[in-house]
Image 1 (cartoon, rainbow, N blue to C red):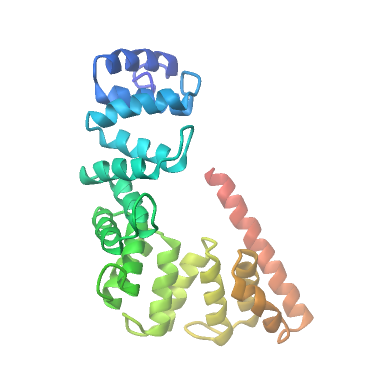
Image 2 (cartoon, rainbow, N blue to C red):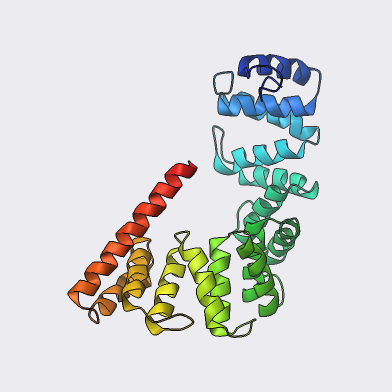
Length: 284
């Protein structure tokens, strides 16, 4: 209550006082909170080693959130020596207790040779468990697994299913990939309008490849009215966002436009960047 300001004024030092008493008595939730306080410097000077010590106590008592947080510390080397094998063990313990983020991180470690040998089947299994609990990032990666046959038999229809679930939660990479599947007719019926729709959802979030793909659709008049100026605008934004293909092709596209059209596209791209920068600032 002191930590959250419920019924009393928020007071991190008072919260720490009571957490410490409960932690000393063996209350694992308090041990976790004490570890977080030392990790973040909340009510006390930040001390990663003490944070690790208290999180370890809670983790050893079966607290899955403490296991996950401690796994993050060992995986990143945040104030302690990096130990990916230890991180893998902690993520595994938390994942088996149903911790969604731990399941996702564990899948990534199996997928990318971190703390263990690469194991696509284990990666798929943990992505699946997290995805079934609604984690958008896991749903996206499960879609990738089905699309590429990583740890499971290739199945484009099932890839599209998981991309859609992640896309509907706002995952920009899933939105782009869903657009690709509609545009190509792979795993889904070919539908240029829906391809444009999903490219646009991702492009508006700043996804560079989706911006490039959207520019291509608009420039060709596929699923949307042809508009060379808007197409070039998205090409410029994609190049600015780091898409290598857009960076190469923007000069080719520019040759087909008049100086005034190029000027309008530059103005539109500047306005887009400004409006989205202001939107991010308001959210922060």
